[in-house]
Length: 336
Ligand code: FAQ
Image 1 (cartoon, helix red, strand yellow):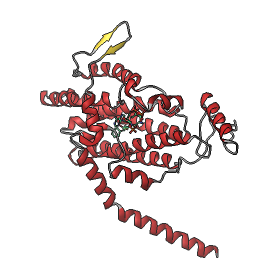
Image 2 (tube, rainbow, N blue to C red):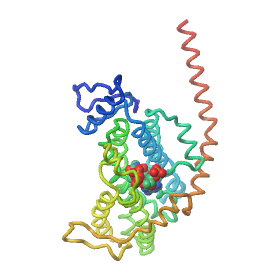
Image 3 (cartoon, helix red, strand yellow):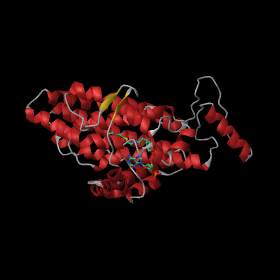
Image 4 (cartoon, rainbow, N blue to C red):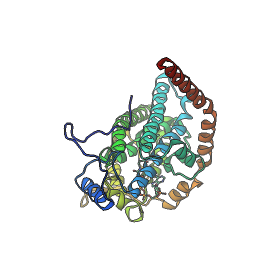
C-alpha cells in the first residue's frame, strides 16, 4: 500500500542518520547542514517548529485544493458528451480525491490530525486554491481546466518533487504523473472541439477567456508580496519562485494556444527578445485576494458542498471503524 510514513534514504545504500538526540543548537546546525546539502528531512527527524508549521500549512492547503478541486469538474460527470469523455472525467476526479489522500497522509506525518485539517477547511479557516471558486459554465470549461489549471498545477508541482520534506516530495512524484494525464486529456478534448462547429470553437474561446487570468493568479502573489516565499525557498520547500513559475507557464502555454487555434485574452502578451520570455499584462490582484478571502463567485457553494459531503460520509467512517474494531477483537480472541 502507498504510504507516506516510511523513511526513504535519498540514495539507495547510503545510510542517512535521523536528526535527533542532541542539544537544540546542535540539532539546528545539523538540520541546516542537511538542508544546505540538499538532503531530505524525514518524519522522525528533528526539525524547527517553524519548518513543521510551514509544511503543515502548505501541504494541507494543497490537500484541500485537491478535494475542493473535484467539485467544479464533478458537476459535469453526469453531463459529459460521450461515454469515453465520462469515463475519463470520472477517472480524473477520482485521481484528485487520491491526491488529497496522499497529501493529508503526508501532512499527518508532521503530527497534525486529518480531523483537525478538515475542520479548518470546513470552518473556513484554511485556504485552498483560488481557482476552484469559479464556475464551470460549459463543457469547454472541463477541457480548459485540464489544459490550463492542471497545466499550471504541474508547473508548480514538478519542483515540489524535490522538496526537502521526504513524504511531500514522494507524494508529488505520483501526483505529477497523474496530473500530466489530466493536462493531456483536457488539451485533447479541446483539440477535438476546435475541429468542430463554430459554436464549439466559440465555446472553447469563451472558456479560455474566463480561465486564463485566474490560472496566472494560481501561482500566488508576486514575489515582492509573497510573505512565505523567501523562507520556503531557504528551506528547500519551494524551489522556484511564484513569478518564475508563472513566467514558465506563460512561455509554455503560448505555443500550445497557437496549435489549438485560440487567442489568449491579453493584448500585452508578446515575445520579448531581450528577456527571452513572453511579456504579459497585469493580473487583477484585488480580485484574487477577494476570492482567497472567501468572496469569489463560488466560495460559499464549494464549502457548503464539501461540508455536506463530509457529513453524508459519516456513516462510512463509522462503519469502517466498527469493522476495524471487530477485526481487532477477532484477532485478539484468536491469539488468546
Ligand atoms: N489560492 O507567500 P505566498 C491543483 C496564499 S492543486 C489561494 O506566496 P506560499 C490540482 C498562500 O497560501 C492547486 N491562496 O504563499 C487540481 C498564503 O497564505 P497563508 C494547489 C493562495 O505558500 C487541478 C498567501 O496567499 N496547489 O490545481 C494562492 O509560499 C485540477 C501568501 O502567498 C498547491 O497548493 C492561491 N492560488 O506559496 C485539482 C501547490 N496563492 O497560508 C483539481 C502547493 C497563494 O500565508 C482540478 N502550494 N495563496 O495564509 C504551493 O506551491 C504554495 O503554497 C503556493 C503559495 C505557490 C500556492
